[in-house]
Length: 470
Image (cartoon, helix red, strand yellow):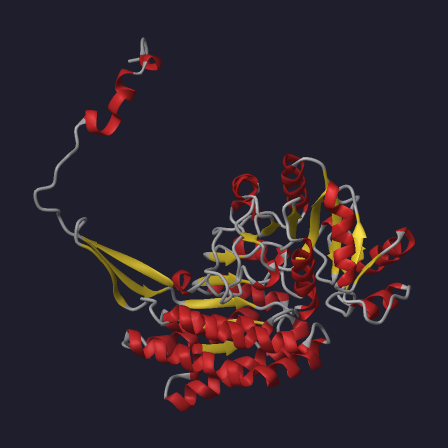
């Protein structure tokens, strides 16, 4: 895309303001930046209700209480994770190897904000960036520009009151694709939260980038599972902001002998199983083209979604199930849906389940996350070893666990790397660690010893495979 001189100049002005602000905090100590991060977290906790109402008013998507809970939970979780984080000055000393690591800022961060979780991206990005003494320029999605600006302005006001430069956070007021592209070219680091085209653009910008791939979580339910618990947790994922998150369970792969019992357990949690005609109507409503979700169809309560699709379901229904046998473009329900719709599959042998999960996620959601409901440790480890995924949630609600929660050890975040499977540079949760550069100071090791070849190569040296080659 060709970028006009006026747009380039406008973005250059924002980036320069951010650089000036960043320069003013380079002498802050570890405790200084930790205090600012804590203050932003506490602001988010206390603004959670206001932000949730504001965002729902603008976008009309999701469930207000879920937004409140997510903001409060992640603000507290990030604060916990930052309490012992080392992001300023000397952060590691290895006496044996005579190495010292020093943390330094990455620079001005370009944060690409999606329509689904704008407030979260702003305050979490701000907390992580400031921990590393960086500044951030946010590029909102046009459908959530007011929400992005609201969170940004609230944090800017806090910074002013604390005596720090407010331009550590800047938001593009009238977003456009051209402005986003210009920002990506002029920033020092990109953190892209959003769809595949956005992430691809970030990686093509010439600027270092942390992108996230598409979510399309698949969970396996084997014959040892607690069926009622599994059904309850999958339902919980659907009601969490009406499946707005990329970590929400999208498909369940069920062992054939417990399939009927599992579907029955799902019905007890308020699931409605669509017949063939209803499935066709739902498909026509959800997708406007292959891989292209209808923005007016996602993140809705189940009865409302069904009505808009052209059929009626009981008003107390919590989620929808569609039954499927294949995956790929001919089977769109095998892809990410961002809605309270879960696709149900049946498998024969456990190996079939693994192949099915890999096939589904090769079509959509490669490398993101999957889950398993099982008490068979051999199954759990085989699943983790053989699936092409960055995260495996065991007997948990995937949608509320793999981006951090108090019931597990995953780092709190809002950006989930999908590794090379998903076209990403990292397979980890993006955290404060990704917002610092490190300088290694290397000193000579006194009385160092070079190991012998026997110590290094052992019996490989006498392996017959080398006979005649050496």
